[in-house]
Image (cartoon, rainbow, N blue to C red):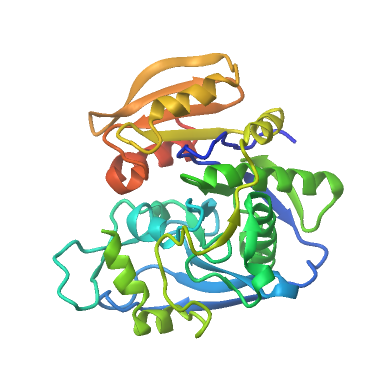
Length: 363
């Protein structure tokens, strides 16, 4: 299978991984269990939402009633043709609401001194939904509004979370056939870098053994969120099931039963690279948690030849960061002034970087 996007990560890397797929739906995927609701307004935002938002649950383990919660935002440009992005956040245990509200989604919290009232939501002029559909997933189980009704179902790991995420993607697409022909990209940041390559590998393995639907893989102010997501009116608007999550936390790092059973994702990345999957790896150059030179170190360990030497890339005449292109369609970029979650710190630069890469343009 040629042409995809993969990303090589460790537990200390910020990255993006993208896949391009087409789906052929001739057989039913057994056990499809998806509930969904269209959200037309949200507490904290004045008036009707000027974009289409859907929330819902997908069952990824029927025997233990493991339900993964999601937010889906249709592209504001051309949803029938624009890419479909599936986004996972790191931790493990950090809610994907972090990405939706602080990084690349259509809304953000107005930064003002908190006075006890419901936080105000504003439109994000650099939202990635201006050029793509984005499906934000609360994974693994126990993250955000995702839950399990059994103790056994609450236990998960790198490999188990990846398999459940793969099930999620297949089931969600079965319920949204209008997106079968859209380019599909799998993305994530921080610790998601350990899991996304495994998801890619699961998809690739599924192709080889004939899993259905057939996937033709081509390319591969935080306290405000706490006050907002724990508001009864917000939960009602989002159609969060009562009694499933007592208190929403942005990062449930100590509250999930998670086993880190993958020490390195090197093997997954090498396996995927052999299939010539396209990749974009970026790091904020002010990321103290995962310094960009650490990212460069593991990229060098792949021993890929350099195609395009180290050079600056620009946004509005200013340096947005530096980039280098490697063999096997791998691009590495730094984001000048970006922290661990670079789009949160440099939204305009990251939007332009994403848009160019998505359009197969040089950064």
